[in-house]
Length: 129
Image (cartoon, rainbow, N blue to C red):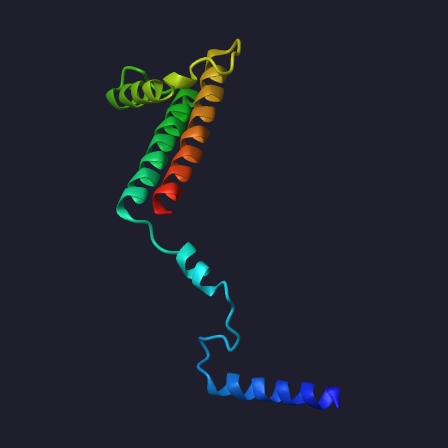
């Protein structure tokens, strides 16, 4: 008897999925509304905060790459990136101390980039919420 009920339910589920469009799921979950809300686009302010966090991170990473690449400091672009990176990483100036100046800059600027990226993501999430 239990197998007959199971077969009937299975057959009725197959009929409903066959008649329903292929895009929708025959079983609705109660979490569908939260899933749609979670993947909504950013509003303008949270998108700006997230973009600013990525821009700061990319400036710091570009400055690290220029330092390790031995870029010419007399170049205007290199000088501007290094000045901007120095200003952005000022709060994290001596978090890590190292005998090699290049390694110290790398460690401090990577830490600063990580903090800016995490803080930007959290702030953008809070603004969306």
